[in-house]
Length: 241
Ligand SMILES: [Zn+2]
Ligand SMILES: [Zn+2]
Image (tube, rainbow, N blue to C red; front, top):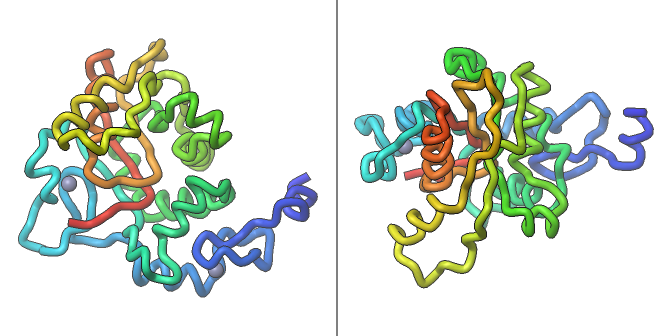
């Protein structure tokens, strides 16, 4: 069946987007070298959110310095890179997010685990929750990219995933006229927790792109209010500051 699927929907390289030579590969070996060298996030990183830092003297990124963080700790895998580059992990994650390149998830998650196995184990989470999208967006796109990541992580690490506990009940897109504070306040009201499973106390939230951290923060707060004890966050692509 896997073979048939791969003939119908050939797996493509998450970096160059060419069809992969073998069904067993999740990225071209030469592309993986480029990604490892230029896009994989290394120290120094923000001690709170895991974003790459430009300066080794810094302990926290600007956003974490300015804003209170309710989550315990975060990890980020790749630098977004420059949009003007012909190829970047930013382009990759946008194809994953908007153009249905869902097979990329197996590579993203393999790399996330390879890079952070120890850290993720130390989080001792008993569940993975994807950052939810509003149902109208889900209908329009046909999937929630964060849920695809969460399911893949669950499969590869054997941690249960719950996609219907944290919901996005309000849309918050057209808010360009609002200030940063107003946007954050609106976002805080956009999420709701529904029926938490009994034995879940420590949660890993996962999303595709991490920028200022406001979404992760808003989701963390509603989870803590609902009785979750500790929240950790993981993202595939991140900006830098
Ligand atoms: Zn490639
Ligand atoms: Zn930070």
